[in-house]
Length: 157
Image (cartoon, rainbow, N blue to C red; front, side, top):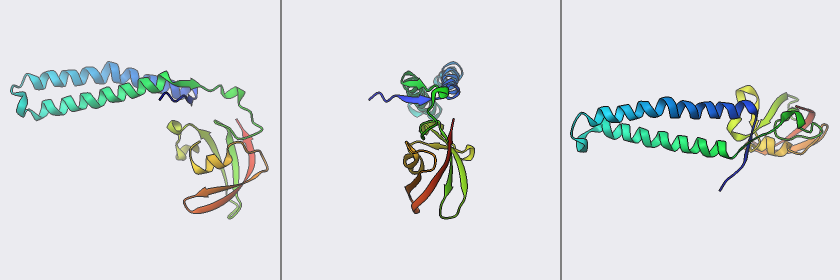
């Protein structure tokens, strides 16, 4: 199944750079390791050869997955994001109504999420509760710790 995933320009470029590095640097290294292990003699009892072949298989799988991701990737033009409601790549400032803590999150695709940077996956419970909502709305989010209520203070790009 080909699932289209949206990326920022920077994230898609990072995926492409990783693919190039795997194909041009890692693949030749593994091929050389296989050749070196093969030259050592009997392959039936050659653990070095087996390990190199396994590493090659894992690398080829990773390359295949990256190619698939890039083929199905679409760039989301962040300048055209509607800031009247919460959408992908929206920057949302919310207030926890229970403890009055304010937090700011950017809603991003799952592959770009990084909580330390304030980037929350759109598939997370908080993001699912915020999507489509507007500034001033109160949202209830079912989290592992129970139902949490947030007020949306602002939505920006």
